[in-house]
Length: 270
Image 1 (tube, rainbow, N blue to C red):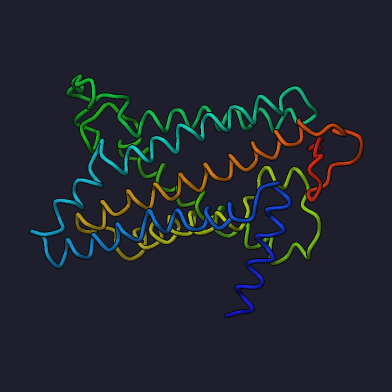
Image 2: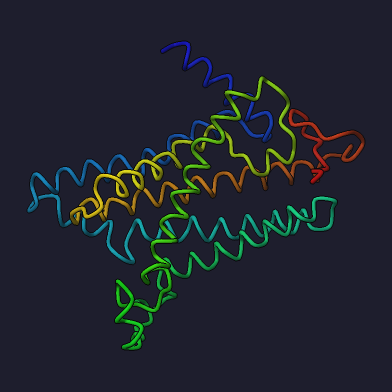
């Protein structure tokens, strides 16, 4: 166990140097998803064992327009902002294609944020057209709750979570201690975000293979898992935005080839 802890500490230290942030930030990124999911899981168990005692609280925190959903919206909205800023930072440079991709990510995040709160429908109170309500699982003016689109969205979450959970581990295991390229830093997350994505991967895997038709508690528990997933995405984006801003502030920017372990990072050759 001590060996694994030591290896994790070494990996987190290397990543903190690469992304130019204090080591405690890595531990915080690991901790937050656990704090989002574990209390909700405990509350779900209590709601199952003692419905009268715990179910009202569980129902409230996982309800539409309640605590966890607004956390999700906040994480997605901030992710859209961070991706947009990264894109604008990269566009004027030789990393233009990476910048365009990040702009697209920002626009997708804006769309997901709007879908998450039903584009304000429940807040403003407009009605759903009858034809649309008939094909929407929640009877709302959203797209991601419609038939094949919903299944595609859930598959996208599964694939994204698998990427975020296992690609960083593969990079750590098979990178052979080589210096991370700036392009790798932009598109391969650090190990610290693995818990956030692994939770979503595990939940979606169970839902697709074992528990396709779960009860209310399992379905609503997904809200905390989604919040953890969106936090992981936000953390990765903020790390890259921070790294690029540190590079811009460097007085010797561009004086030499970009290196992961050097705060004076400039080019990302595609």
